[in-house]
Length: 415
Image (cartoon, helix red, strand yellow):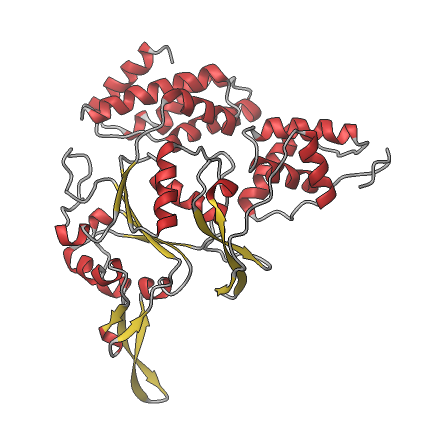
């Protein structure tokens, strides 16, 4: 690595170092950008970009495309500078070649502790893509917070258990699956169940086509037979909305058997051994016992029995949520704490069915981002923009009687 005073370092290259380091240390990107600036000064490197812009560039690179891997010398030097002694990932096998949507890669098993902020030593499938990953592989969320329930999900995945994740809206069910797929570079096929989902959408249908003046029949595959033969994760989202006739179509697959396409002369579609099927829903399949999720159906015992584990998600404790919100948005600490205290009381009222409009972490991030945007571009201090942000994101989405109650709580908290 060149260390002369006239040397330059591309901002994108330094941002790649920040992205790589974020996987191994519990520091915000702002903190890592500060350390990166100090590291460049110590090595006689120059870059025409501020620490804040450097952190923003890293975030942009992460969410818009996979960054180029940093040079080995730079990487080792930077890791040593910030005090990270990364242990090599344990390779649990030679790997198996895979190809999905024209993208080639190598399927390998890694220990969960090498991929996530956890001590779990369970082996989980990962893919190392030769060039670029398919579009179905999600982007990593560098601010994702690993919680105890996340360990249950990782263990279920390692054991290949068909799992049903349930909990109130905004508790992080889908986010957990997305982050697992992102960190492991696994394709994610998300099937959203609603009242309009048909057997043709799920399994497929036969269509009559004109082939040079002759009418021929052709079977058009649905989303399920296209996903099952490949390594990855199939997420059955809002599965408690599924109709009984569709539920029975899936029973053989949920038992680990092949999918039989009766409309295509009984063709059998095998399920890839590393295709993990997981469901996410607001209820555990026993119907909406709290009256908050209209449309959730009570599923048959035979259908539910095909799932091997049921994992409940709950809202994050407000101090941890406030710390996460601050790391992700750079909103001042005292404002993050007030927003998360409000969210805590809002959710308690939601649980008591005093209000039927939930509040999620996504909404907290939206409010924080709006306050920071108005601060940068309109000169409105974050503390002066809290109420307007809450009105636009939370209060205006409520019925009038709920709005009165929740604005009262916000005023009591001096928001």
